[in-house]
Length: 204
Image 1 (cartoon, rainbow, N blue to C red):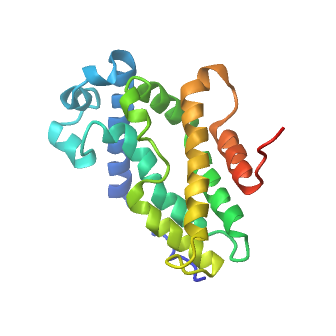
Image 2 (cartoon, one colour; image 1 turned 30 degrees about the vertical axis):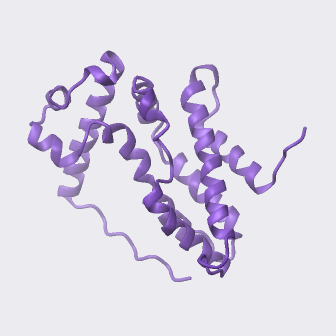
């Protein structure tokens, strides 16, 4: 398996764009938490972030994307992390490690702010999945390559991807909904759920 190309360092323009992007998200989370998702407009968010509506839409396509985009765009990060796992590592272990590494990369404060915001939009919560449908085929191809399998003839890569992300999403959804009653970090819950997929424990 060939190594992925090295990523270029971010330019000043990249960093400036990233800061504006972060400011818009932070402003949105504050407003959603204070007023509720349905009571906040894109104009409200732009004003809170001190940017023009035009600048807002250069960074964010829709209001929903403020809550769902960060999670859904994690697919590319997980794929990159999976490609960087040791070539000899078992496919299930490599995929689990890539998913957990991605979850561990979330900033704790940003994650808590996101959680408080999305709880004001329960209709969006079920759509906050770590693997979106358009990216599933790419992930299956990566796992199949690690297995040395043809995903069009062998169902194992697809099943492993489906089960692993279903387990991670289950832990993620539980964490979002029950965080107030639990103190464990999200990455621990995700790792535990993935371990059940790798080593099923269906009886006590």
